[in-house]
Length: 473
Ligand code: ZN
Image (cartoon, rainbow, N blue to C red; front, side):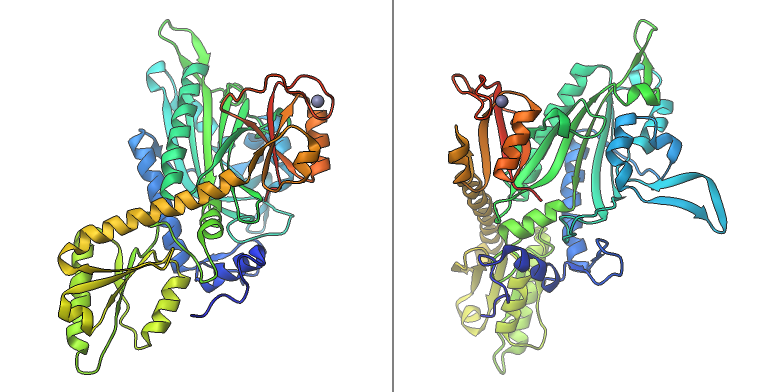
């Protein structure tokens, strides 16, 4: 069976660059660097990911909104840290037709500064709270580093939830809910993750604190696929988001945001794929079951009609399937659908027809199973669920094997992946370790992991907590 030119195990980044185009996810030939074209198959995959998060938002009473793409400079500048953090990454609109604008507009890099002036009009009373909104839109960031499909791009397919609360505690409850959403959602994508609380000097511009959601790629570099931010009233003050309390006084809202992007696709591609192509998690795969007729002369009609029956049955059970009736060899069809990562294949030939059986072949491990026709839908459902579990477990093992809790720099130098070292709490020591290990700080584990009787490997002072380091995308 043909394989990709570049082996995943030999050169992960080259393999990744090759596979995103071979599998018809995106077209990188658009003449602006970092702005790729979503091809139909890639867009469908992204849409299924979006549907899962929409579903989670619906269940947790968030309302979908859609704010304008352009933000006036004056609104953007209201929160000082925010403008400092994003200033060098924004695209500006300075002309409308032939007229130079009196005030510049920018393409949203994220939507706080578009939404919050309007939230200040929507929220009047404590009865308007909590306000829980989200949108799925494209955002723009002028990336100067090397771009990479889905991982580092300049036009980003972006999910952002924005909430307003009566006080800090209620906003904290929202963050707990966000963590639960991330957990359910990422399990469906078969992506094990870690939550880290970013160090103060590396949090989101304007946030009180930031929790990053990172996954570990096969290159043993981490990829941040999402983040959750507690803003306190840092934005509510400059944007005047207040409400009338029960006793008639006015208070500032406390706010949170939760963001994720098309990087999720980058993680799915990178973590699950192999030398034959993508391996897609069944929950988001555009096609879950590909049905391949094994045509024999004189029995064409019978076989095709059986394939169509199977398609009908699966569709009735809301299993996304497709009959590949193209006039090419079955071998070529296998190759195509393996490349596209369809989790399960059904083969129907004269033998299967006679015995009233169906051949199931798993994409992830190649396992073949002959089942009786009358258990078709239950068997397919079970296989899809097993594939999901084993993709998750395999990735979880990889993460576990590459997460090292150590005591000294010497030990850390020997390891690849995510390193946890005792930390005294100062920026100076963390930065020094970053330099020595040639990696970045991810943040502290949010679970309270004991670090008694340990000391900072740089200054020797007692450790306050653990700090994580990794090479990152
Ligand atoms: Zn120290």
